[in-house]
Image (cartoon, rainbow, N blue to C red):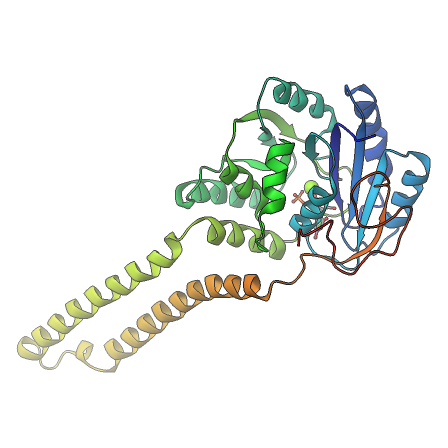
Length: 334
Ligand code: UDP
Ligand code: MG
């Protein structure tokens, strides 16, 4: 039997949240109007998460799981879930209960109204630190200004997508996956459902500052060429400053020959200024070239160590707990 709904949850070291997650999500699954599969993607957890996931799979046949051979990151974990999902409607949510499972029926209602993408939009971020709130606020607005597509502010990956959207996402070969941007890029009818983001149920935040910054840069670089143009503007600006300085130097030489400003100080400032402009521009270029390099290598997106529960799907691995092929791919997906 092919499920009607797939729920995808990426998991990294979430041993303290998994049972509570299951306790809250299983009544939601019971009340949906069709078969449901719960796809837990273990993203290289080093705690007992995988054992707990296996237990859930033994207890409840609706629970399927994928387990990566190492940590590949949240976006790739969700991508793997999308590759394996069989439902007509696919929901993505976090394991830490910041995305309340009780909102899923509302997402489904909107889908049944005819929307292919229903994304949850945060109205409040309860108990998240001021630094995270401020940076998120600035980033989403900056992204909206710069991106080629209209990426709605304050939306994460918590959403429902129709099979047609998931098929397009799965057919996208790019490695640097900023899913909420790709979701907007695909189009179709999209709508928002507002919700208040709860605090994390337990455990530590897995999106460290470093990972969040990486995701933010990925979002900007993947969806905008404006940073490249910005280095051109910066170059033009430096040229104008250089002309003004040249004029000033001639002026001082003629009218104030003893002025110290014509000496080393001004040369040092100019060297530092130009050095900064050049390094900054090379850095921006590097972000783009690095991504081209990643794409050209064409490696698989992830490696799977274990797959279970996708018995009657077209998945390459038999179940339960098969030893899958090294590249984490249903067919051609990585
Ligand atoms: N996660 C993951 N791999 C990672 C980082 C995070 O699978 O490398 C999962 C994590 O277990 C959680 C979700 O992604 O289910 C969101 O992570 P977290 O709550 O730490 O980040 P937030 O979005 O709340 O900042
Ligand atoms: Mg969280």
